Image 1 (cartoon, rainbow, N blue to C red):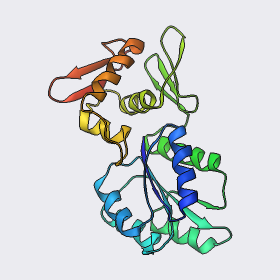
Image 2: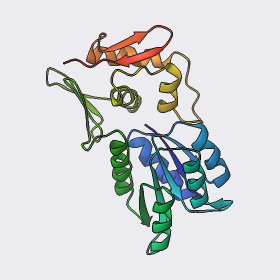
Image 3: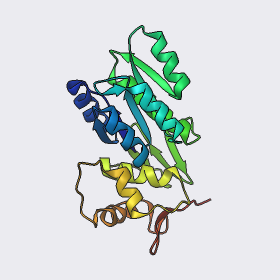
Length: 221
């Protein structure tokens, strides 16, 4: 649930970061085309919000560079209202969606969630694995007994990551990348602490530990 915001308008960027974090994302931000190019190629983002007019370069060239280097995460471009050519050029360069400024943050977040769902082969806001249902909008988990449990932001991001690919082994490093942004400095034991808390909800056998490898959310039929 880690996303990148590439936007040079400081106030707009700060507002986006706050709202995206509130919606359960871990967010990195840069106003620079040069830094965005590097981050997109080096970090594992679930989605990118990309402004085209950047002070040190064109966001369109950043996008072309990413796609030529096989960076496949969904990209939503921000364009000036009514500038249809920007939209066409962005989509041709490999963008997955666009949004014209000014916009409602709620719409942007809904579009980002939709892009991520499509990239995972889903169409609904519920992540279902066996008898468990994770609600992206309510940030809550429904367990096999029908009970609904509210989650903290970090609990939600961690469970969202594990449930997005059931049966897949996530290393501690991969989970840390999705839970925290570049400015965070979490302790080395934070993943184990949150895994223990989530196991109280889903059961120890549901989230298993692969020694020396990582953690797996197991599918139960």
